[in-house]
Structure formats: C-alpha cells, structure tokens
Image (cartoon, rainbow, N blue to C red; front, side, top):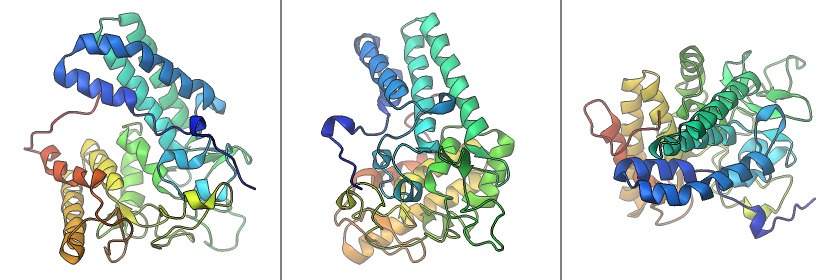
Length: 324
C-alpha cells in the first residue's frame, strides 16, 4: 500500500504561534502582532479541524509530518490510526501562545477562549495519552481503543515487547509542561534518566533502549505504509538527536532536575565535539551507545541549540522564557 501525499497535504509541525509570541514578547511590536494574528487564528483552526481526532485531540494525517520521520508508531501502524503525544503537546503550546498574543492585543475575551481551549486539551492529553500502568505518555491506538507502550497488555508470558512503543513523542508533553509534578517525577526517573530507556551517555535516545525495535542504523527502517524513500534516510528508532536533548533539557529544568539538566547539556557538547574532532563538522544524529556521528555530513541547523543550553542553567541569562 502506498499513500499518495500532495504538497498541499503536507505541513510542518505547528510552531507558528509559538514563534510569533516569542518575537512579539521580545520586540513589543504589537502592530506586527495585530497584522499576523488573524492569519495565525486561521492556521491554528486548520490544525484543530483538519487534524481532529476523537476526545478533542489531534492526529498527524501523515506520520512523518511530525519531523520524527520513521518514529516507531508512525512506521508500523497505518496512517490516521494513531493519536500521538507530540502533536497534541505542540497544539497545546500553540493555544497558549495565541492566548499570549491576544493578551498583548488587549483582547481579553479571545485570550480567555484560547486559555480555556488549552486547558481542555491538557486534560484530554492526561486522560487519554497518559498510561498510568507504565507511568508514561504513549500514543493512542484508535483501532484498539487504548494507548500503547507494549505489544500486549499482560497476554504474553514474558517481558517480550513490554516497551516496544516507548518512543520520543512521549517526551514532548514534559517539554510542554503538561505533566503534573507527580507524573513528571515518575516518568523522568523511570524512563527519561534511565540508561535502559532514553538516557544515553550522549543524550536522549529517540526510542527506548529496551524496545525490540531499537537500532542505531545510519539509515532507518522503512515504514509499512507510505513511500519508503521518504523515511529511510532518517532514523528515529534509537539515535540521539540534538532537538530531543533540547526538549528534555527544558523539561528537566522545569521539574526540578537542575543537576541532571546540566549533565545533559555537557553530554550534548561532548557528542558534538566528538563529531567535530573526528570529521571536522557536525552530523545530524549520533549513535546512542557510542556517540558515533551518523547521518548528514556538514550539518549545523538545530545542533546550534547546544550552544544555548548553558544560558538556561541557574545563573544564566536565557534569551527568552517559555510562554508560561
């Protein structure tokens, strides 16, 4: 089966309102804010309407729109059947950002409306995408009517497949500050900082080390559905990616893991330095066990986020704050 995707069907992650709110906050340019606000409203409405899923949540129409390309649930499940934690965390942040922009425009009614929508989405994320049994966020399988961490819920006679789908989209609600302190403490201690799951000596793995799908191939496994050429030159089934380090770094700071955040920042510098020492340039991702630079020669882009991390540590001077 091949899913045909036109250019108009494909959209990058919904970050526009977040970036607009940051720009407007830094510059105080409310004339620009007023100009773009109606367009941002239409763009966010597009996501809420055309990517709507049950429970008041959203889903990727095509899984690789997430940017996590061959992330494991996107790879093995059919399109339109999975409600992923990452998209809904981004939409939550977009709603919060729109509320911030409305506040800057002194539109109290619109501000309250967006804050109410954000709170409703936060509740739905915690109701449907939090797996209390495992203590982690997880993708919701619309075919089975439950969220998925394991291949099976107790029907297997061993631990085979117990953490098969414990993947990086589960980390984004922590970055978005959706988890309660209790939820975050549990998830961070059991999974994020656990070397058997996400925490590598070089940062944050894109898939739990305990998943049967975990690998550090330079080119990722192709999907069961969709154009395999779109996904095989990117692997989010194990390797460390700097954006994941960045998201988790901020989550650790917010939930009180300052020492662990500092260590993650140091390890992020370390893995990039290894690439520069070995090749004279950075690559896009890194082996979760050895730190070996993997794919895309002479890559900079989001790797530059590493240089900002120390600014956010206690005593630093961050260039902007999250929108809370």
